[in-house]
Image 1 (spheres, each protein chain N blue to C red):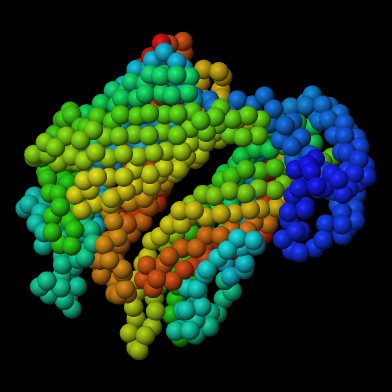
Image 2 (cartoon, each protein chain N blue to C red; image 1 turned 90 degrees about the vertical axis):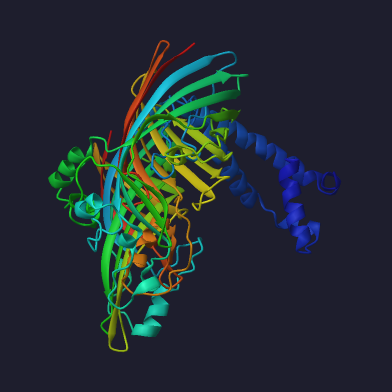
Length: 228
Length: 410
């Protein structure tokens, strides 16, 4: 009530503008509600996933690789992996906007070598699902999505320490990864092209060392889809 | 309008900026962008999600069928919708599950030969040549499970009101050698998975369709049985489900399920595999959202185990299901179900030696299954069928399950 007394002119103008805009938007929405459709997409992606990169606005506390580099020397490879991703999305569209649900299954495997000859094999299977929001433009459909899922992982260590080789296999699971993604689909009749950037927070506790390894990071994916 | 302005005032007051300065700096462009964002989101959701029903025939209702978990309460995925006031539903549910785990498969310490000679605790020792005596005792859990379980459940649901549903489950259990081993090994062969290696669970080292139930903790038997049993009454489960909201154009439908297992302290002989004797209870929070013919379900829950018999004292559950409505009466479904392991973590794994203990450590990792199935509601009759497949292969989940539910509602 205090603000009403101090700024009546501002509020009056704002009120007029508010109702004007509301009227405008209501009219637009009224037209948009006239056409509603449900769409589904089956997609296959591949690209690059940087496990060392920040998972965007999501937190990550990865320290496993840094710890190993301290003990076994520098990694000979980058911490980028090439995931193969199969996705399925469905959404309900009304006019040029849409919202829906999607699931992605992603898998990757990579062998890492350290300068002292030690090796590490990392294999991960992720099932990610969540909500997606689309804008259906004339030539492209940009989207935003977020969600959770789970990651299962197998890590095989072969580490040299004072002339002896220690081998270890660790299985693990991340119960509550979080992700968000941005991307776009470019339709070409039923088929189309899709690209996205995904930020995933999925830290796995490695039982052999009580350190955390990031199974997510930032992925840049490119692929094809079929819409029906 | 008031609330929007109030937000600006409170926000900036905390940072010590006088009101007048803020109001002058609050240009129309800023206001427009904020308003457009809020209105846009609202209208987006309003228009995009309008007229969608938020519950269909529901996810596949299969509880965890792992033989070690059968004696405990374990909540399963359910629909957010409840029976309406005064309406009843009665059904019979049968689930046949094949499980094979041999933690001694790598070292071939347990094969059909050891089984014929009667398995002892020493068969679960570490065969590391550098250790002997008590040092050979493996910390944590070791298993030799060759079990086919059949769980028969009579289920009754009644609508106390339009949003509260009462439930009663009366289960009966059979544990035996079963008949699915040949089929599963043939499927492994077909897809190129060797039954003599880890991914094939070392199945070829054991006879087909035999029954063995051995669970070892810290080198000592917790359960050891080769005596199968048939149609033994397990403990009944009471349930109450509350449909908090049917959702709307933006929000999903939300329900809360509570369940309680009524304890039966008679655990002599094989009853110790079918009854825990504890009053387990649990809850499941379930959400569902419809997008035309498609529906998505999500659930997160917990079971607290009262008498855990050296197993986990709680089980965490999570599921995600996708339903496609073929018609108003039938649907096809796929879903994933994750559950924390029934085997608790007993110690930290600090040594990196490739010993038996390390190989068994994956038993404490949560389990994952993929499920697929079909649901039908035709007049008063209901029908559900499907399968579940463990895709993580950690040895703490049943390999393969087929299930059918049929009944009627009135």
